[in-house]
Image 1: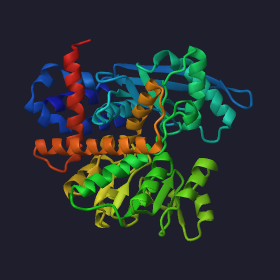
Image 2: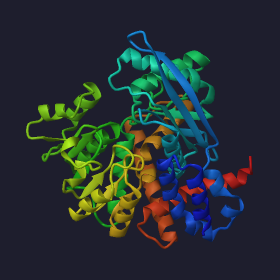
Image 3: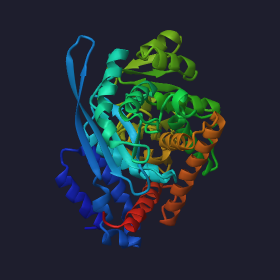
Image 4: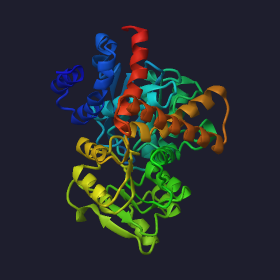
Length: 450
């Protein structure tokens, strides 16, 4: 049994109740063996055993009062995974599905994603099992303040810098920043994704979606092709999906789908980004509202499609952008995409494809951008926000966007060259995992056992 397999078997016994975490670790460890074989120092220093365990996992109770005057209780978390190359950096997720296993998966992925950016940021993740949907503005504010009443003890601008994620946008970040400032009497860049009025960065809102498209374009160009003129399917209808659609239009591609937890929109003429923003960012409504506003757009409720499947992936396309959530694209979906002529899949969400689907894409030889590489634009721009805060400067949109484009190109080049180094050209899963791993592992060795 190889070193990686041995570590993986131990984790399966230890964390049998955390399947999504185990999936994320397996996807990484099973591609690292060539690097482990090439350099035995990683086994000598027990890097795998160390890197799979968080440096710290914090769990706490969050008590708040709703609009009816009733006390509500939620669970909050912060997983500080690895600080070998910089302060912990990763989003906060507010969603009923949040638990320690989910956050460990996200935090583990964040280690390698952040390493790939080339920036000095470590990996972390956090959140709570709170659902902002259906809550009043005041209820959301009360929860965010209560959440920060505990979290503030564990974060700082050179310690741990959280950002947003599912359920946590600029509104929630603003409420948490205000409470942090009140509790600490300190005005510092301890949260990213802030409003530009108080230290936020231009282009941060757009960064993950834009970066995903930049990465996909790099993949296509490496094979003498382009996204220009291509029909694209996009899943999700949140921040990442919206700005993925926007950037696709800007480079001459046509996004024709978006979806939320209740259904899918197919717009053969192309998704109208201004309408989508109105529905999701202003009205915070269901996509049925998009269908009301755009004649000819077809709405398909999830109940009209087989359980466990997403109607988005049945739409013929040349490029696919999973931008919703983990495991949203399975093997059957992958087979349909490939049969319909899809030649590029670039992941905007975290681990949206199951392991079987990933293997299908790799075997087919299409352009496949794994999440830790393709969706790193958001965290990269968060670090650019940290840099602006530290220097008390504010860069214009073009400056930030140009830096983002450069970072995504660097990530692609690093993953691509590493894949070639190990004789597996175009396998960006292997390339991204090994490239991200070696930087962090070497830093851990240099810092000793501590």
